[in-house]
Amino acid sequence: MSAAPLVGYSSSGSEDEAGAGAGAGAGAGAQAQPGAGGCGRAQSPLPSQRLPVPDSVLHMFLDTEEEPVDDPEKHGGRVRTFPHERGNWATHVYVPYETREEFLDLLDVLLPHAQTYVPRLVQMEAFHLSLSQSVVLRHHWILPFVQALKDRMASFQRFFFTANRVKIYTNQEKTRTFIGLEVTSGHTQFLDLVSEVDRVMEEFDLTTFYQAPSFHISLAWCVDDARLQLEGQCLQELQNIVDEFEDSEMVLRAHAEQVRCKSGNKFFSMPLM
Image 1 (cartoon, rainbow, N blue to C red):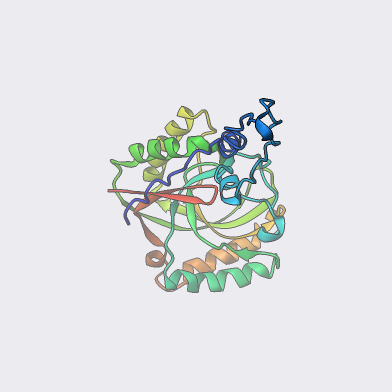
Image 2 (image 1 turned 135 degrees about the vertical axis):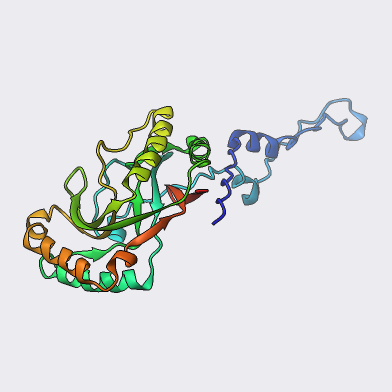
């Protein structure tokens, strides 16, 4: 996959400048004219009339920065881990996981079984392995941040990994619970990637990744802390399903081919060699 082009952003101009330009000359050139009958007395100038500014001009200099709108109804009631502020973009670095039919077949068995313990579990919309925590970037930092990542990833080789150990996770705030498949081979390569991502985070004074991370693919999630229901017997049954699934070792072996950065609603791809 080729690298996604860096998205360009245009800086906004000044509405005051537009207004001044549009109004310039509205009453210019109004001069005292000789009165009728040859009197040298000057007539009072007509009051200047300001022409209306066309809508196309008024909207030329509106801020073009797109911003995400937080609507909990659109994402299952999930709670933000940090408040949204104008100009702040939630940013995340990860390795995307491309699903195959056999993987989805396995998930079709795992999820219904887990839902017998926690019915509110829902399948993830997309699958990935995180290389960073979610951090906040100012809008004008996005392109320099992505370029720094590209520079760090330029020499990394693609690699195979396997994720076949079922594990239960929560976010730091314990407001969401996840069922994941933990990486059992390829861990060292993921650590190397995180090391480079962390260096970029430090350059921008951002939070680095967790110590001793557990690299994993999240399969399903629910609101609140559901570890009590999912760990123990449920976890063991889910692991048995994975172990007994036909050719599970091959099904859950994947190729890491790129690193991706999501910032707000924009995606940037960094192919590995």
